[in-house]
Length: 436
Image (cartoon, rainbow, N blue to C red; front, side, top):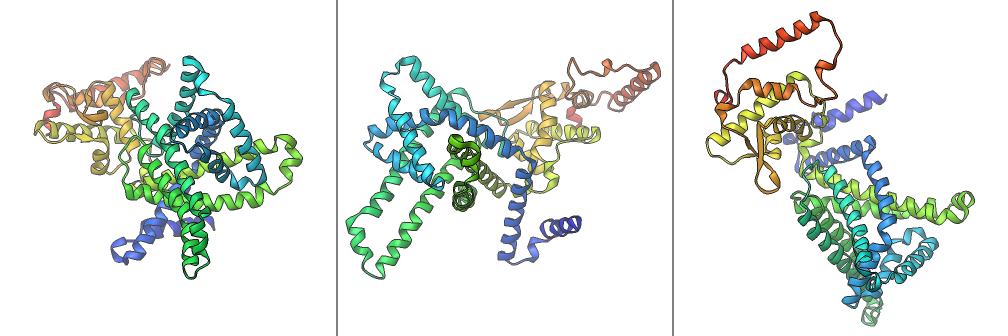
């Protein structure tokens, strides 16, 4: 029955022609495809593992992060909004959230940034930067990005997130609180229909601010260009899941007496860790929504292929080198990994396996910002087809994992030697220039 259901889902998602559907139906199919990709990724388990890792880093970095944020907010005179914003964040934890937020604020008050000294301040900043670095690493993995930022870029970008992020977040929380407590607003609430409109705005403002915060996060943190519409789509879904999970968590977890009975005094810590895990899993899922919205061609199972046969590796290697050499020869714009993916219609992960072997054998080199473009490392006449095939056939070999290490009989070694000779004769004296 499950196999039949899976077959029907595959037919609906991948065998339906979007051109034959109305715009609403086509958008619905596209959205279902995105949900399919995200659910598949979560089911694979890696987002869950990264969320668990971020729980540990968050617990270590929480107090230093809030201490740095408190110092920044104090300079702008809005540090009083730290506790209300933290209470609002931990609201799904109920009374335990209020207690926990008060304890965290107590810890933050005890951290005197001004008297830490240079070594203590560096350790404090390093702890905070490590959290942001791990978040970026998780986002980059979601976006299939292997190129990391330089040290100078990391420092400047991370510092901007650490200093400006809390300022914008807590200022927004302060504006929301002021809006709700204003005497003028209270007067308007008693006048209909303005009262109903104001109440709707009051409920919408926190939602809009949360969407805006997640949108900025999905744009700024990954080391790639994220479209605003894709980031907004991911942020919208994340905010909805955030609100729903908060309600479910407060109903089924916080009000349960099982955790208190089992863990006693540790119950509040266990519940807090579970809540952090749920939040990070939702945030990483939102990053996947943004990724698949921007790259719908990578949702299908075909784009997830990472195991390549020898024949496929050889064909990919020759195709990649031909495209790059042709553009280089005709002074055209060089190829990037994204352009190659669209042209060849195969996943980035699969191409990276082949490109890495070409780079390691010094047949290709990188250029441009963030080394995103590929060009031949030497003249086309000096790159033989035999060199390309040897590079890709010996990919992932190492001194500790080499064909010569295999114990076998002489007949097998002789046959392997004949095969290698036959390949060399088939491409004898042919170079990369011959392909273009």
